[in-house]
Image (cartoon, rainbow, N blue to C red; front, side, top):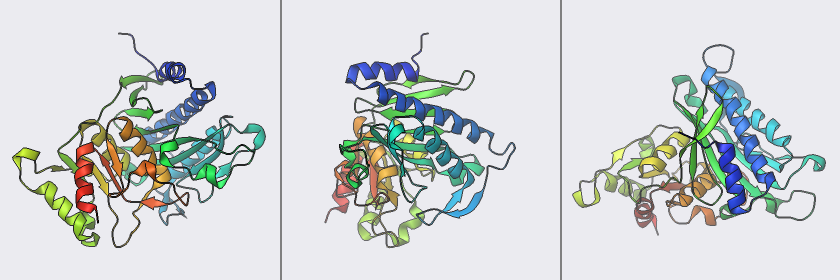
Length: 329
């Protein structure tokens, strides 16, 4: 049976959406970086010195894993030389990388280079989350307004899962499409065309170990999902991997809701708007789902800082609406 490669799909989307060759080239560079990281992840533990921590602490006060550093430098190197981007921001870097004018393109690339990397030594799926914006300002320099755009302004968003198979899922605003890597030839093939999340699911995903620092509304919401009610298919099943890309990927395929609420330790939430919440919100909305802080649509937020954090409720439209009904003032 004839299969469609990711490159062929991008070329078709380019014609369908009237996109430029520069955007297709940018996506191809992401694809190259994904293959390099996938290969390194699959070799982890066999040899070399890629597992464990570097001894450094990132801007969020977290220990930097060696694979975090490898993934970050891989993307920065490849995207920075691609001629398609003018700036690169990352969860692992305090400040953006501004590409020199002679090598700069018109896009801004944002990423969580390796989400869930602390799980690699126990063989849990991890991943990359990315987002693409178009430069707004007309001058040569990159401005604050270029870097702090509303989530709805995204040109594309996506993620790569490095697991039992490596998958590349993206949206450029016209559906969500998933591709699986054939490692024998190093090519991604379309495996999940036009992905749609169920309107309602029966799975909730949250770290219940944090319940002691939740507010009463969040506790009541979880208790609701645990209550018995045949009409609403409750109780829901609890599933939590602790690697956001993996938890979100399951939610996208099977429906339900993933939650990372605010708490007394993190009153503004803990997930990064630019690198996690916004790109996954772009994906889920293009698949028919919903993403919210519990009170506000994620894609309506204009961040005030590149490392701004937000609470996140994301998944099936009706399940997220249920969460919002419990969390509203």
